[in-house]
Image 1 (cartoon, rainbow, N blue to C red):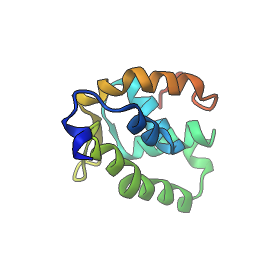
Image 2: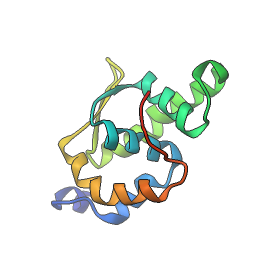
Image 3: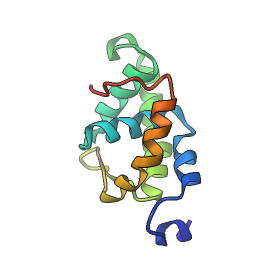
Length: 123
């Protein structure tokens, strides 16, 4: 992983790996479209809206907890590992880093090819 970090741009295989999971693709697509930080709760809402096509009120508390836990323990750490987001656990805030821009060319192609990721990406 250190060789990836030392290179100027993020390798295409790394972008593909980040996009392998549907929740992560949705998070990345939102950041690519909005370019702003989001709370953990907002990310959960975004995933429910775009991946499940439901409102938060239509989803069980267990499912909300499961999505939240997967973000905190799996998806956000994967994005942090390649320095494309920063997570502040005290404020529960996730924000794209300057390095996120390096994902854009490959990420845009993946987002456009995914029929599940239809814009607009908003809360």
